[in-house]
Length: 114
Image 1: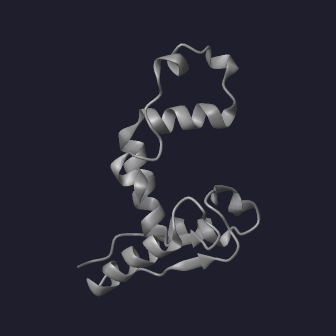
Image 2: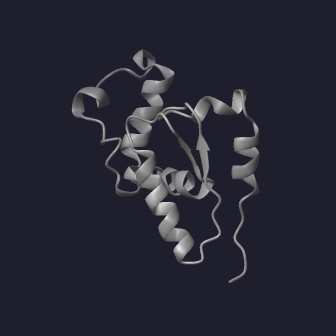
C-alpha cells in the first residue's frame, strides 16, 4: 500500500546518482530504479494488493493494514482472495523458488466483465 503513494522507496539522492553504475549491487540498482520510477512504485503497489499475499511476520507493514484493505474491497463486492503467508516477512519476492504457486496465481489475474 505504501508504494501506491511513492513513500517506501524515495527517489535517489545526488550521491547515489553520482555513483558509478559498476559499483551498484544488483539489489542496489533495483532499489535505485524503484525510487526513481513513481509509475513503477504505483504498479508494484497495485500488484501487491491484487495478488492478495502478505507475510504474517512482516515487521515493516502490518498484516492488519492489508486485512483492512481486503475487507474494504470485499465490502465493495471486490473479487479478492487473500493469502496469509505464515512466518514470512516483508520481502516475499524470492518465494517463487519455494512456492511457484504464488506467481502462477499472480499471472492468472485478469480483468472480468462488470
